[in-house]
Every structure is written in C-alpha cells, then in structure tokens.
Length: 304
Ligand SMILES: Cc1cc2nc3c(=O)[nH]c(=O)nc-3n(C[C@H](O)[C@H](O)[C@H](O)COP(=O)(O)O)c2cc1C
Image 1: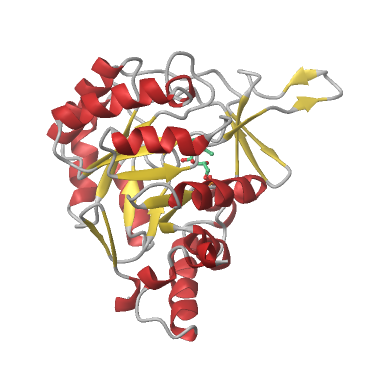
Image 2: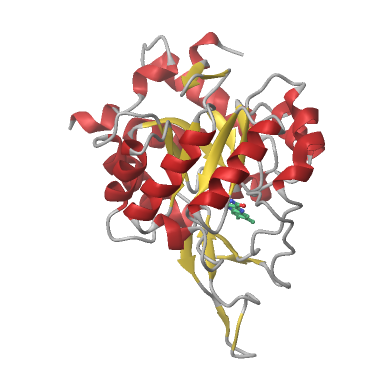
C-alpha cells in the first residue's frame, strides 16, 4: 500500500481514505473483517440501538435506475450484543467505527457509552435514517436536537464522534454547523435521499414501508454538493458518502472537501474489489498530479 494514501480522521489513523458505509456488510465481525481484507481503511458497523430491533418486513431493498432503494427499518441485534463482532474485526488493527441510533439524546448518550464499552474506536451518530419514525432524520433535520444529541454524547465518551447527516433538509450546512459547535469531530455526508418507487401493473409501492432511501450513483451529485457546501463552513474533517463506485468518484468527493470516503451500494453492484480499485486509482491520480499525499487534494475544487 502506498504511503501517499495514509491519512488521519479525528485522530484515527487510516492506511487509505476509504471506509465501509454503515448498513452494508456491517452486521457481523466476519463480514466486517472481509471488508478490511478487501482493503478498506476503516469500517463502519450497521447502525445499532440500545435494544435489538427486527426491522421492516420484505421487500426492504429494491433496485431502481442508478441505485438502490431501501427501507430496512434498522434491524440490529442491539449494541450490547455486538462486542464479540467488534473484537473479531479489531484484531485487524483497522479502526472500527460503531454507528448508533436512538430515539432521544439521553438514549444516544447511553448507546454511545455502551458502544465504547464494547470496543468502538469512534462513533458515527445516525441522525439521518430517512425511514424510521422518531429517530434518524427526524432528529437530524432539527439543528437544536442535533446540538442536544451531540453534546450529551460528547459528555459521556472520549472517542471521536462523527455525525452522519441527511440531505433531506433545506439547509444541510446549518445542521453541520450545529453538530460541530456541539463538539462533533467529523461530519459524514450523506445518508440516503428519501424516495419511492411504484410497480405499475400491481399499482403498489415496491417497498413494504412504501417510502425509503435512495443510494448509489443517482445521488452522487447531491452528495458532492453537500460535501462542498459543508467543507467551507466547518473546521472538522468531512467524510463523503453517496454513489461512489470508482476512483474518479472518490477523487471528486475529495476535491469537493472530503478527507475520506465511504462506499456502500457499489459493493452490491461490483463486489468487495471496489476498495482496491478505488484506492489504487486515488493513489495513481495523486502521484500523476505531483502531490505527495492524498491530503493534498482535499478541497482543491474550492479554489475556483
Ligand atoms: C441496504 C442499506 C442499508 C443501510 N443502512 C444504514 C444504516 O444502518 N445506517 C446508516 O447510517 N446508513 C445506512 N445506509 C446508508 C449508507 O450508509 C449510505 O449513507 C448511503 O447508502 C449512500 O452511500 P452509497 O451510495 O455508497 O450506498 C444504508 C444503505 C443501504 C443501501
């Protein structure tokens, strides 16, 4: 692995700037480990809550033009039961970021404490899930609630706290600023875009939950815009996410201002080889442009 690729996000050392996005292959230690073995610089777990949750009935994921539509309903075994899984992937030495969700700021703080107790190297607060009531985007679209959640979590734990934002708001920068002022160590942008699809023969919505979140190439320009706008207003690293399928996409996010990128849906379409092809491509681009480090390209598009 080229030394040019090494980077640091809020004190976490990454061999390269790619991460697994929350919710894809993040539910067991062995699947997280397979992502590490495929070359990810860090992994994010499936979002975990204080209590186990079943999620929604099927269909929970459908393929649409240029992406996936999902409404899983946050199925998970509960953060307390995730210790063994985390242990398995921590043996690799790659940072493990535990994604948590909750229904109140107090519950977020409790889940954060438990997550750190079971071995999280950092936390990613999911205040952006678009399809579960009273959590996710219902919190993340209100800057005051975001402030409350981040403050409570930061008071409880001393690991880096990333806040993952929803694009389903009028002003994502306002929410990012609220998170950072409350102590967020990094911002992840973005979660899925609220969306739906209808089967015209049966006349039924395709997802059991009817409305879900769109991911994949369809949302990339939205995500790039969010990263670009957030980068200029906050002084913590921004982690880009949304529709990254090849190294060019990753470079685009970094030029917009992302210090690292997360990859989700592309794994379903291209397999785990996507991590190696993206990191090789970023490395070649950085070298070709005459830079010594991947950090040198972050935010370059802001100069115009
Ligand atoms: C099937 C599926 C499940 C997801 N589950 C979660 C989750 O549990 N927590 C979360 O923060 N984001 C979740 N996401 C959102 C992704 O982490 C990511 O933000 C989004 O899919 C955009 O990136 P992508 O286009 O690379 O997939 C999920 C996405 C998909 C497709």
